[in-house]
Image (cartoon, rainbow, N blue to C red; front, side):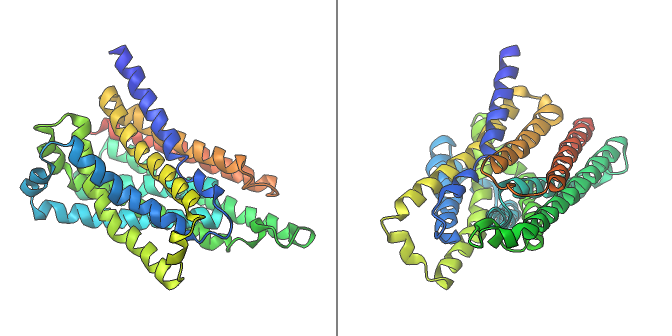
Length: 350
């Protein structure tokens, strides 16, 4: 039992490292690479290629499971998966607008809030006015403040960089970034939409139950994940196709210099889906501790890893000390809010 706990927490921490790192390879594409040339292949691999390659191989009678679940079960899963795809797409945009550290803080913060509240309202509304419901609401409130403070940090960062602009190199890409307020709004919107993954998972519980009859728990989880990701393909891949057409950049995908971009997109996709898989695997190993301990460790560590990469790659170079302190305060509040949410979830009757 002790070994299983250690193994479970190791999987969760490794998954958090992957989740906080999947955006990092995007920093290494050439500056003239259009956004859709990197993120189009990424979304195609994440939502179509990997699920098609993996799910039928590891899940026994996958098609029969979906058939037995029925269209009434599948439709809401696909719809909320589509909304999650929109969130992932806008997260990719927010990386380009405001960098990894701030995008991770805003996205994960908003994702935690929405991903906690909407399933509670849809599936356990009678639990809101209870002691554990109060704790969950308190956690949501703390996360809201954390998101607001993180957004404030981004605005202060932009102001401090603009103050330095006259004395700086006018070609500095940092100073040519889009308006910070727009980026902050995109980051928050991406988190709200990404929170739909939790709702899709709630609607997909019958699929998981059917898959668990003849598959181990980790394989049953893949059956659920695959259908959500395929729903996300409808929005994320379609948006990238529209951008490739609108910007006339399809030809960039066939150029010789696209090979490094494909490699980076593949690495991002592997890290992204590894985070989902490793977290689910760790949850299985730690059992009842998954809600109260595993969840806050995963979310908190992913936020911290994402911010580590952001600072390490110089995203906050030249930003004021005040803006950095605001960001740290926002991250600390997000971590505290996640812990409160986990405590509230752990109090829910089984």
